[in-house]
Amino acid sequence: MNRYMVSHPWQILRKKLRLYQLSMDIIMMNRVCKMFRQGLRGFREYQIIETAHRKHPIFSFWDKRKQGRITFDTMDFVAESGHFPPRAIQIAQKQPAWRAEHEIQSLCNLLQVLDSYRNYSEPLQLLLAKVMRFERFGRRRVIVKKGQRGNSFYFIYLGTVAVTEDEDGSSAFLDPHPTLLQKGSCFGEMGSLSSTVRRATVVCMEETELLVVDREDFMANKLDEEVKKDAQLRFEFFRKMDLFHSWSDETLWKLVVLGKVEKFSYGQLISKDFIESSSIMFVCEGICEVLRLIDLESSPFYHKWIWEHLQLIDDGPPNIHLKDLSPVERFKEFQIRSYPVQDFSFLKLLHLQKAQEQEGSSFSRKIKTSGNTLPKTFGSKIKSRCSHLIKCPMIQTKYGDLPKEAAVGAYMKIHTVEQGEVLGLHQILLPESQQDTRPLILVSLGAEVIRIRKEKFCELLDSNTIEKLSKFSIKYPSDEDLCQRFLKENNWNIFRKDLVRLLVEPRWRPPFTPIQPKKKGTYNPRTVTLDLYSLDKKTKRRHAIFMAPQKYLPPLRIVQTIIAPRYKIQELLPQYKNAGVLM
Ligand SMILES: Nc1ncnc2c1ncn2[C@@H]1O[C@@H]2COP(=O)(O)O[C@H]2[C@H]1O
Image (tube, rainbow, N blue to C red; front, side):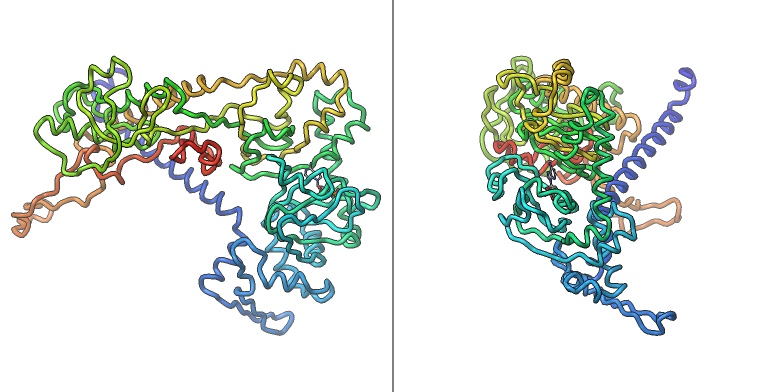
């Protein structure tokens, strides 16, 4: 095998090229799937609302059975984004007996975006669409009150409500982590059962649009049986858990009514800090990920790593002519042009520009910088190698200056919680002083979760369960360890990418060079013509990567793709100027 490879290096190149092409195809397919997945979430609604918004078509056809023309004006279902469409409101305001069959069907189609509605069988969906009415409430409006007899059951079409233990719902606005229900969820099922009162208060956190099913319709459509079926499923789920072996059925039923199954789509944020939320999460379906947002700036290793990446590998100026270099030198060249997590390319450009100027030549593009002078190095080893000063905006940290661009945080996955596992139990018995209180983010990878308040859960604990819990411990790595893992993985990623580039890309075509149409030469052997017109035309010089315009430089590196609440990073760590890095 080895001999074969040595004697035919071009074949290796071809193989690598195929591998490269295959990886590119996989990446592309992944992206397409991701787009589909995101698109599908609102697909049915989109069909009705968006196309109508653009073209306003009216569909019309002759119905043979009814011997009449049926028209469907798509403008009927246009709504302000996210709101319940006015035409659908009109239908939902009619008496059930007055709703035409096609109106019920349209309503039913529109409501497919609601998870809790879609879960019902199709005949039941139609029955519900026939009887439900529309209601809109403002912020702070209490919809159901704890302890009262319930008259209705609700689907949330728009907005967010909070479930609270007090009667007026005010605690939801003081609690940093209230129990929230959003679009697609339903509530009020317990109070709609004949024998029970409302278990909790539900209050609107913002303007909320609801579809309401009255108690008589609830019972007439046998929805109470669906509710009982759900409760039975929760019971069976808990019954299977080793933790509850010692629990009597009666105690277990007490646990069952404390929470209900909530569905979270792929990438949806379940809790931005489940440690502080004082809830326990039972994962009954799918997978969740626990993420930690680490402050890279506060790690000395990160400082060192950034500065190492920002300095030139060789003392001398970079050699932009890639020809006649030994493979090792060539690899170094590639390494110079690799970028760490963020797009620090402009910082590298500065280094390279200086080096180039020292050599007598200059870059055609000046890089815009402002602010302080970049200190030469971090640490003595690097100091001796780097001899020129460059300018870029800096921020001061306890380990010295850091380019502003590099002051970022990173989401690190620290735990994957699978079906049948529980979160929030690992330090339930520890005194507060010994607990790890670092905020931990919980993200769904398409999970169904039962959320139960910790204090309610603790009320049900018996000695047997306490003993089991005392043995149950998870130790999450420290931030410093996470930072080192992050750097290690990034180093590996950069190295791997450089190596692939080195092996599969032709020498004379540096990576990320904008694709240009092939210049016709003066003499084109294919057409056998001599093009005199292009004689005095200058051929455009191909730029090496570090001279390429910024927009062609590689963007943010994502080490492990997850859809995390990236936009939250500034909210969670306000000192960051940048949106952060995904890990
Ligand atoms: N822990 C919980 N998680 C989600 N929803 C809840 C929780 N507790 C109560 N609810 C909902 O809040 C509603 C209050 O009125 P009901 O008791 O009729 O029905 C209740 C449930 O639908």
